[in-house]
Length: 467
Ligand SMILES: [Fe+2]
Ligand SMILES: [Fe+2]
Image: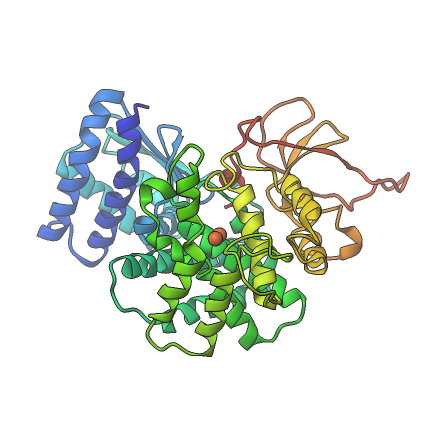
């Protein structure tokens, strides 16, 4: 699919969602619906002409257009979710359009969609209502998960995550523009994360393992916040402290708003001058946080962390200090989360993303000098020796992605793994296997991890499996 069409794919899904939503509240002949349909057709018809046909398919949490996965982007997240719900409700997995459409075709489609919504056999009803229309056909939803459909904790977790990212984007934009902004809403976002860490720790940590989102800065802040809260929870901090910690972690890099974007997003190495500017962000962070509305004790903790987060345990980092100082506990937590997330992401400090287990071994090398060794032990226990998202080779010759860590520390090396390449070398999606499973006769483990692999080398797309 040509690059430009790929760009438009997001808009197609979004406009389809808008059309569906509008037709939910209005009659198909209503002007608002017609407008939405016209916009939708204006994007898709040229593509259908060029490509011969257009397939929109839902697999898991992702839409694919003519077999290309469509990226999530923040502003569309709610519309995407809404469309996913409507597809699922009717068991529809794909819509195939064979020829450029007319407004009336879409009206028929929308009527079929809503008729199916009230039917006992929604998919069949929809198929039947579309039978007169040979330009559009639909296909059944393929199940990729065995979980029950009514409550999917993954969706709840995903929502919390994207909410946090979109909030972060909002506040960073405001601060950049010099607008006054407060921290009340930030606290609510953090509260949500805390609630979910108590219930679905492993899933939420899993969200931080997906590194292909559109914008590094916002996701990085949220990831560091999630990892810090999870670590804080493991060492027994109370709820109030967790909120302060999460807030401090979310704002640790806020000083970067003052770094010119051409430096911040530079694809090559920094010059010495550019490094000097980068190194000012802890100081600029302090300045930005002091300006927040409703500045209180929590915000004060954030100021400390923003200032200290690159200092390192032995104070060898930056900014340079005149006097010795004992790093704040929150700083020591955030430093671990920050370095881990930065190393495993493809941007900023490490331009090539490291596999999660490699990042952990670097952190181990850095412990004492840069990193608090005891906190690091807790951190490794938390993300697992094989963190979620690590690609591993099993002794059955299967390749698998670490899907969920084992909550029992005794079995830290035996997580749940989703098989992505079977023993014959075929790409598969699942099953998800538990490495603590044993053979009945021999009592030996059925599968063991042989080694970890670099998912980039195998072109394995983590988000496709994790979401
Ligand atoms: Fe930083
Ligand atoms: Fe950072």
